[in-house]
Amino acid sequence: MESRKIAMWMTDRRERKMTEPTKLLAIKESTTPLFRLELPEGGLDLVILKNKRGDYGIIENVFVEEEFRKRGIATKLVRQAIELAKTLNLYKLTLTCSDSMTPFYARFGFKWHLLGQSHCMRINLK
Image 1: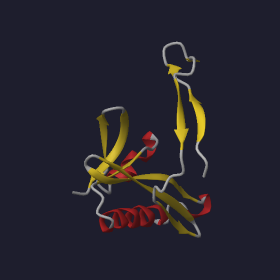
Image 2: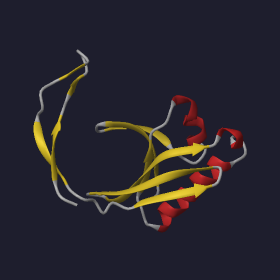
Image 3: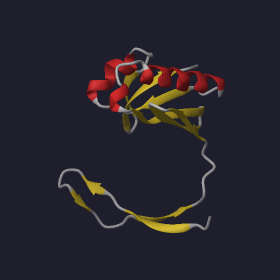
Image 4: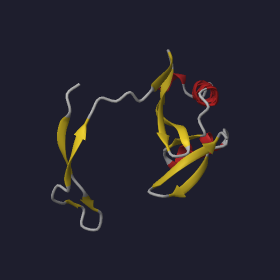
């Protein structure tokens, strides 16, 4: 994949308007692992990233088709994602969710973290 340059725009939160571009970034092809856990009734994505502490995962795009909700499908998917993360020796998993879903994820050990630049739910695996 050929590198492309894009403009990065910043949002001024107080005024809710776009500022001038701050700099150009080079976008290159990524080899970031992405796992898709899928059932006929729903699925989720597990993205693997790395920082100075090691490999970690982000759970994204969790969904269960409406007619199959409240049947344990999401529970099965999240448990499989946690087991996969342990198998891959990840040190943590993070996710973001709506307030109404926090009790669901808390059942697996996810807790709210307000560290650095993010506010997310997190479970430490190591």
